[in-house]
Image 1 (cartoon, rainbow, N blue to C red):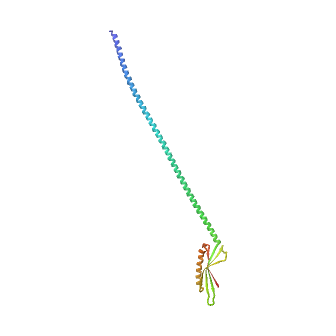
Image 2: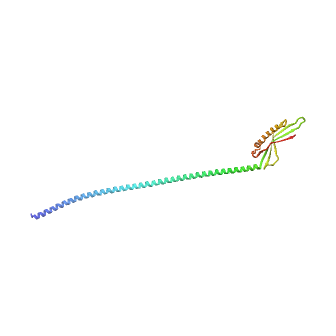
Length: 230
């Protein structure tokens, strides 16, 4: 065989072998590359899924946080509203209590003023009546003597005399009220004093009890002793 042909055939054979080897290596590389791409895609898909789960969890947390904030704000608003209403009710109650106290004090003041005015009016009327009308009451003793042939007999009438006065001036004739009759044997200063003392008691009792007149209207006057003959 021609050496040239042999060399050419050898070169062609070597090329074929090299081509076959290259194709085999390329096929293996492609297979490895495909596996690597598949693994990369799977990893990227897992990362994408994890990212989606993270985003979903984050959105859930954000939503829950927003709901919590909204609930907290609503609760705070409600508590504030209730607190404000409680303060308003307390303020209204305090103002009402102050108004009642003020009204009670005003009523008390008006009542005291009315009482003072009524007392002053009554005092003025009382003083006017005292000046206009009064009763003079005097202890009264009347001694009656019956002169006999042998001896005299004596009788005493004990009581009081009263007279109505207008502005201090007698308005009517005096009137005598006899409370007791006494038989006496003789008339002397001691007997007269005893009779006047008894008449004084009758006059005081008349001023306070029988006449029913206030002592300011009933003016006690000095005692009166009258002597008469039967």
